[in-house]
Length: 118
Image 1 (spheres, one colour):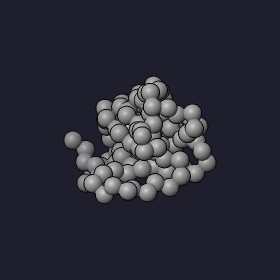
Image 2: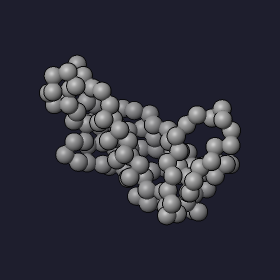
Image 3: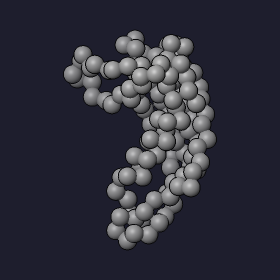
Image 4: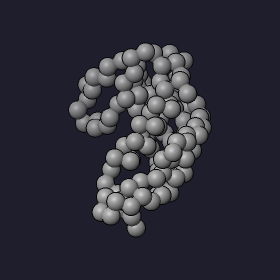
């Protein structure tokens, strides 16, 4: 789901994404809106299942997700002028914010973390 940055406004816009792969089946529900500094804030909840590998035993297991995720996106390079704000910004250089790309990357980040089967 690609959204043109210039069409994003300050009032929240709701979205829903259904993402499926051999390793995950999740639903992302949230909203995005433009902040005064030109950043786009994405508030969302990722829920569903992800297949992971236990780092202790090597066994595959399924984990249920219900994660609040807050992200920021920018059209172009983000130059943090205020050092007390500590957050990551996803930079896009084609004028579009790709929500599918963002959340597939988040799922890959979850997959790369250290996991133990409980």
